[in-house]
Image 1 (cartoon, rainbow, N blue to C red):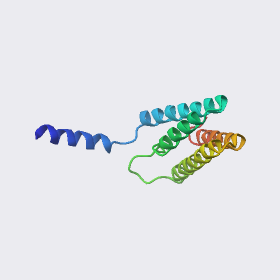
Image 2 (tube, helix red, strand yellow):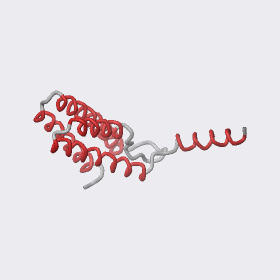
Image 3 (cartoon, rainbow, N blue to C red):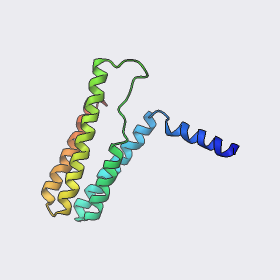
Image 4 (cartoon, one colour):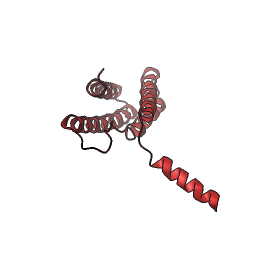
Length: 132
């Protein structure tokens, strides 16, 4: 019984742990991998790769958390950054869904258009928030 209780406490500690910089980096690497999978799918005209990359990207984009500043009130710039990051997440998720849908329907050019829009959203976020 002690082992089960200890395991529950440990799991709940890790499940509710703060989203760290290392977590964010791992998520960014996973999203880059998803984008590479999508790009390969375009190059090989492989619907399965595009669908898998899109699913991976959509799953991962929803886990990324914008940087926070402790428990203090956010300043105006930090509030803007948080809202901007959330807006970019929604746009990327939307474009990824449309891209996969249109590729599966055979409209490769519109699908690639959405891929380009995703790249623009990534670049916008990195430019404004990551200070490229």
